[in-house]
Structure formats: structure tokens, C-alpha cells
Amino acid sequence: MRKMAAMNIDSGAARREDRNNALNPLVSLQNASLGYDLAPVLKNVGFDIYPGNLVGLAGPNGSGKTTLFRTILGFMPLLSGTLLRGCPLANFGYVPQSAVLDAQFPLSVGDIVEMGAYGRVNCLRLFPAQEKKKAFAVLERVGMAHVKKKSFFALSGGQKQRVLIARALMVDPKIMVLDEPLSGVDEESRCSISELFIHLTKKSGLAVFFSSHDLEMVQRVADKIIRIDQGKMWVEEQGARPS
Image 1 (cartoon, rainbow, N blue to C red):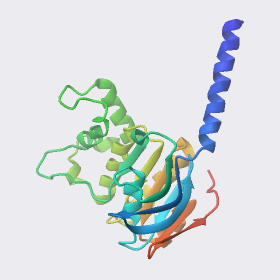
Image 2: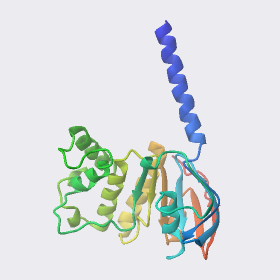
Image 3: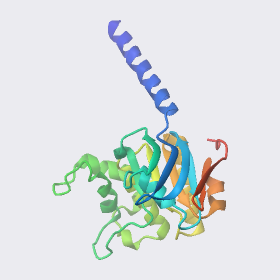
């Protein structure tokens, strides 16, 4: 009886912790200025991102979208204001605008995804079997397990983006940050990647924060839109998307 009571207490505590985590933002910016060498690119930035949010960052090229991402990810210091992260940076999955990968190297899809584990695995040693299973599992999540052994550089633009998303999922992220993930891909790929974002947020509770200069596309996909232009930022709430 005491053992069962302890188990009930533990499960109750776990549920309370999950609820508390859902109430706490993964990213919170308040009255923040962002930029380079004390020259602000964006001023008075303020918004929160919670677990399960699908947030689009919309603005023209050069408006500061990448600057905002780099600040959130710790690559750049905040000039002023407050930035709070609700989880360690190790739990941020990042897909940059352009992955620096040399096509001269014979890298397979599986090789690319396994790179996502290098933060916890010694890349000079034999890659652990459990990590290989995990790499296959995240490829399944993005619908790319069938090309695991194919050359990454033989893939289409949309397929490459899915593989890079799988690589970011290897870190067990609580939030995914994706810089222009729908640029340079065809309309079919844009639709399928957008559906993947919706699936990740609604079924897995992951927060997804992605940028695009295509406002119409962002409005079709995101629950919340953060608009930036000419150094200013404002938020548009879209309402909850149905599960």
C-alpha cells in the first residue's frame, strides 16, 4: 500500500510539473534591443513562446529576423532589456538558413542526422547503437526514413529541409528555431513542411518558431505572427489552430 501511495504521489507530481512547464514560456523577451556593436537593429522587442506554440516571424529580407534568432540562441548578446529561456540552450533545436555542408564529402542522409548527436557523443568513437536507432526514429517522424542511405546532396530542396529538421530533433528539443525553412523549395514541399510543423506542435507539444519573408504563407500556418519591419516589432494573434 505504501508503495502504491508513493507511486501515486510521484505520478501526481509529474503531472503537476508538466502543467507548470506548459504555463512557463520557453522564450520570453521584454523591452529588448537587439543588434551589433551597440547599434540596435530591433528595439522594444517583447513576446513569449510557450510549449505547443507555432509562431511565425515575418519580415522583409534584412529586417532583423536572423539577428533575433541569433540572440535567442545565445550567439549574440542582448543590447538591453530581458531575455529569459525556459529550458537550457541544449534543448533548442536550430535549423539555419543555409547549412554549410561540403558536397565533396560523401555524406548520407543518416550521416547528416547523426551529426545532431555530436554534442553528447564522441564523434571519434564508434557511433552508439542507441543513437543510430534514435536517428532512424527522427527520420521516421519527418517522413524521410526511406532515404536514410541516400546521398544528402542528391535530395531535393524540400527533402534536404526535412533531413535538417530531423538533425535538429536529435537534441530532444523543447523548441525548434528555423531560419527561412521554406525558402527555395517547391509549393508541394512548402505544404508538407508546414504540415510537419503543425504535427510537431499539436502532437508532440514542441514549440516551433520559424521565419519567412512570405507573410501570406506565415498567416496560413502560424498560430501567432511576430512582424518586424524598419526596426519595429508587433505581434498578431491568429487564434488556436484545431488539433
